Length: 330
Length: 44
Image 1: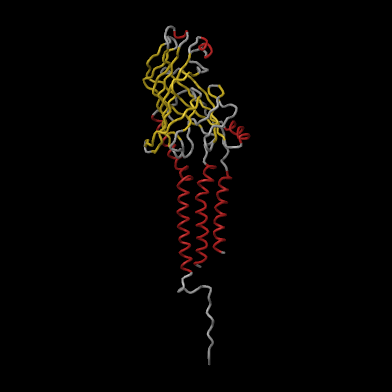
Image 2: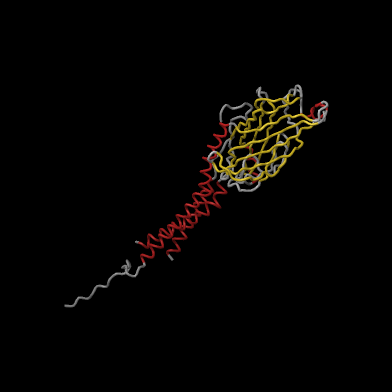
């Protein structure tokens, strides 16, 4: 009986011990992925910002500028790309809509971001764009990979359409969540005018004809939960200027926007809650279950060996031996 | 010999389970009907 039990325990020990690395290094990279149908909105605000008044072409102080950012997974487009890319792909159609204090549109920049659902590496396919212009991303955008590492990453800047490093600056605790803090500085860079301008009758082409150019710099800050790779908080110290050309008269430059953009409080709370719940699922697959199975496997193996050793003790009667009947003498 | 068979059984079952999990794939998805926002939402 003990031998049978020790054999069953041995089978279970090998089962769990083998399951541990298989789950971590085979199943997890294949199962953990960004869903293709995700829909997410985010509101960011820049209080006491500076905004260009296109009527007088002067910079004015305003109470608040609001940025509404939406990301919508385009399932049909991702399935179309998957047929040729031969891997799981996510297509995010995004819109960054900027609204002034009076509720009027300041800018609207649509973009399409295509990436590998498992690794978050960019996938290059027709349709990858920012504000209607084809682009080729070489870094991540919006989301870090699962199991984010303490290192610099390449991050795509949609305004400048360039990829620059975003530097790991240390580990912090943000509202009860351990996060990695990343920071990227985009130096003053000449950037295209948005296709849709805030004033009717003014187009990117008509402004370009005046010789005026648009320049931009930003310091981008992200607090990223490393297990899910999801940012729980973000800030941007953002400045835009118009420089040169006849549009500015005798001035060299004018501020088009300057502000410290931060996530709105209710969105911070909702993002932290969402990331906490997702973190548990990813940590189960990547850490808790593999370690648990390994410990269980070792424990079962020890128990199996113990039972086996007990069944072989010399003092114990062997279950297979049967006593010979002693002959009776009359 | 019986110990070897028991260990092999455990190993085969572990591989089978992991292959089953990875082969299941994800449920079919649909693009959200929600629009790309051009107004400020009052809450998340």
